[in-house]
Length: 302
Image (tube, rainbow, N blue to C red; front, top):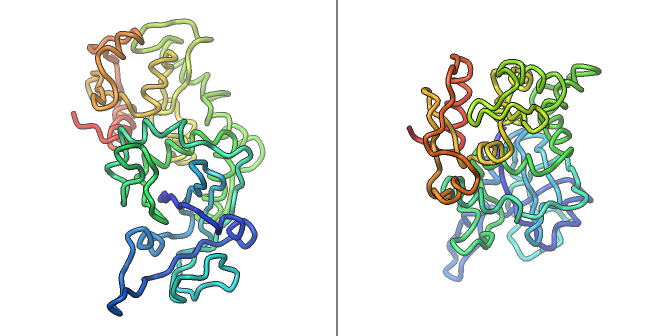
């Protein structure tokens, strides 16, 4: 699964009505030569099961899952904007309409601080404006971050991805167990708390009702086993859970706290009551492997 971002203008109604995205392959300049726009190039790279966040006016209004790989196609006759050349690429999609739409303000700060430099082209300008490009490639960490802001729609999107990739879904009670794990509930939560003696492994907070069972590798990027594996979770206190979930902090193989200093200062940690010398003890091999993936997704180096 790969992630992309598309900025929709006048064509947003057309996308919902006909379930496709389309972009021209090039434009012809005044000198008669073909020019390729950086925001059109990612369209060619989309494959079956890839996720595309559809933005309009700084709100994600749809989430599209590609039915198959992008393919060369003439400009569709339904295309609302008819000033492009006829040659282009089309992506047929399954669409989840978000009601209400999801504002970019919820995740913009974290995405800019941690993932923007890995987006191609960059999603946000230095001033925080969304880039004026048609499509942007997103790194896995950015895609997983945005998915977590979709609420229950995240489950629907991931099920569409599974159908396009594998052609099957979990059914019945197994599906419910996996869905509950997304928000740190059900058997997953019980198993994570039990593994860590019902206490936060960093702060020592031992009131389970105040702890959140956080996935180390995001639920959306985990396979069916990893989604419910208690080794892929920590029972963190609220502030630490938010920092870890958004990629502001991580831990190395020795359990030492790693801090994304570009996003989080010492004063921030002090206000949150978290020591820069915080550490997790007793990490097993499975937890270390999950943490290595968390560091990679959020661009940490030991």
